[in-house]
Length: 329
Image (cartoon, rainbow, N blue to C red; front, side, top):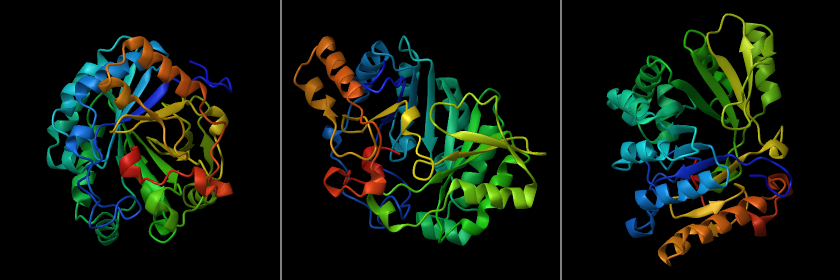
């Protein structure tokens, strides 16, 4: 459906858990956070019912996120059910890759369940840095996960690297090289000032492009790019099997083309990452709301999606105070 600014909102990111098996420093403190009680997390039946209502108002693409979505038992069954919802054309997944690396058959099971694309988070190829950033010596697991996903026909693999000025600025060319001999996309994602991320400095798309061109030659924008689910832009480097992409919400604000909303694991429908609060769909569900009431609440939330984020304005009274593990990555 269209929001008040005539944007076609057809994509939702659904967080199925706030729990994670890593402790990435810009997302969650090393001691962890108090997990949301199980009874406050949406059940799979509730998620499927909401997905049916999302589809009825025009959502066509679903991203399963967390926390780490694969730590929630039964998530493969949930994906199968969501993929069968009438109107849902695509189900994708974002993961840190550790569990897939430890159980490579998971990649095949996810594809069989209906996942068409898997995004794997990887900010560094340096083992010591990886452990410092995530609290885990899991780099080998992530690399196995990348290769497992790349080996499956019709499963698109992507690597997401958050730009961290003090941790991986010197690894830009090396990270991009993951796409040289593999048919995958490496996307550089600008750090968002959410939660612990406020304390980390990033760097932007223009600097990365110059760095890559200095090493690999001219980067050409992919004119045939279908843009995937969201606002990433892609470039091709000569001799590369895959592509390099950018999700640059800060330096190249794409709010005018934003097509997404988010559902937290507790059932808050959030039209924009920045703004606190959201529409409490869990409360409606558990108070006996019928499908029409749910659809109306979803339509209202989508229609009133803000025109753009205001991160650069530093409007603290409107800022989301929760971390990304709560909101959904």
